[in-house]
Length: 527
Image (cartoon, rainbow, N blue to C red; front, side, top):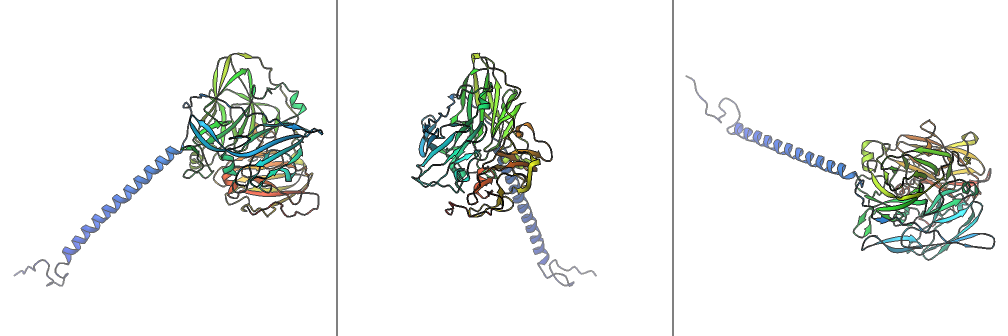
């Protein structure tokens, strides 16, 4: 006779009553929990994916075809210096607060020189003595650096030449370099980005006899136009200064201004127009060209004219770089100066989030129905005054990283490099940091010798004081240091993406006589 053990008993030595049923219930609960957790993971993944997709799409900025170009381009006035008996040209600059109406009816708090925003264009000739009375009308200390100028270190306007609120600084020097498009801006350690972004910048044009004889467009504000390009973003009435998520180059705006003018146009009266391009943005790099891809002639770089014009349809300028271009216009036409997307920012992530995919309509040129004839550009311009690498007596190496150049963050009291007056050196600059950088050296105009082991392209063959160094790039630069020697007062070298500079990507060098040791930096006030 077969005996059936009731379900849930332990007569056969199995589980105690109720255990299989509880196990079944727990199995179902674990399955349900797994389903819930799985659904949660999928939901989070989808949400993160959607967020990333939104960030990716939102990071790309374009104003192409959207700008109405309804404001006449402002031209910074030429400063009117006094001239002393010995011929010294004396300029006066005052840093001050103000309000600027970039948009109709909206006053934006800004800073400027001798006005509410930007500053006048200073102009002097090679061989002239120059003196500038710089008064700080702000409520915080600042400086004025003469970017691209060859001058004594004590007159350079770096972070060791701070100007206290209410104080006046009077640098003076003799102009001893070729005709060029230079500029001036603050350089307080740790605060440069903020001071430049608020509006403290202006042009400093140099002339010489050689360039004066050339048949180039040279009537300031007529056929020779200053083009100071900045990117901006507005936060209500104020200029925004915050960095977007994953923007590790620094602040990037969502529109551009030229000479402080939004949506600018300029009426053109001549066949050939010279544009003096200055990238005065704090972090953004541009690739300038024209909306119809017309060719133009590059005639000058940071430190002056080229040996001969170079025909091209794009010129890339990182923060602080300048280029002089000449474009031919046809009667009655309109064409837009545009910044195009760039492909040399590093990987796709860096390119998208640091501005490489962005494009801007910058300035519209409107030609009159009848244009004044312009002479053709000369086939040759000026002989080069750049140093040769073969003359170098030594080399130095500079590795660009956010942690600091050569892994050393900036320290005001430390001299990083000591160079001998009158010598030529080759500096090797490398960026493997994954993001874009650039490299600016005070006091000198250098020759780009090599880019990744090859001869430099035409935009890098002229005199330079600032170069764009994308990820994966190694450059060799030839520099000649002609003094004067000053073992106690350093010049700077740094990344001119100003957020990087402010956070430590900067070093110091002094120029000394042969065998002379470096001294102790003067003017250090603990900034």
